[in-house]
Length: 276
View (cartoon, rainbow, N blue to C red):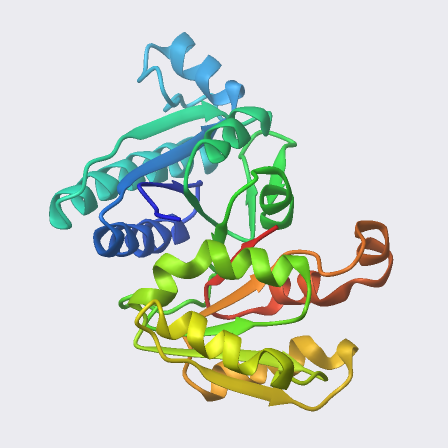
């Protein structure tokens, strides 16, 4: 798999700038195009057209304060920043605005992108619509990277930890993450409460064929403690990205019991690469 089109989701928060910078650095390393999608409520578009302001977003004083000034200002700042990132990293790409009152347009773009960069949750101002990273990852059919608010700056995906289990989801996410794993400086593959001996030689050979070495780590513990144990290892090893399959249990059981996926999406303090 190669990443030729990366889609980053921007929103009406200051964190969009950090997310766009993360995506731009990743696009530069993978020689990909970078597109930014910005969901906008039709409520804002309506007021913008009525007031004669920019057709993409309202700046009308009739909007409730302070949102009437803050939301349009963040929109324009985010777009300007995206343009500067394209120039700085010599990337090609485009700015796309979609209906933020419905997840359909955003999902349609995500499904035709090679990789999607997303926040944990996105809420469109003046709309009841919201999109979580879990919903996006389950619906888009491809890999996503969830960038948390506390993620640091710097070159992404230099020190990667792969959460491994003998399950379809783990095998799938490993295939999807190869372009980043091949470029990493350090890679660890970690499993909890299981032995890697039956597949140890095969795993090492698989990494070596891609010009990469891997540290295989077995951690003792119960399955229910896996999120804490994997996060502890990732942070103590200085990892800057965690790779993990989405929903390692049946979906109904996952919803009832919480589970590893929900824990990781909510708590992982570094970018989380996930697919299903």
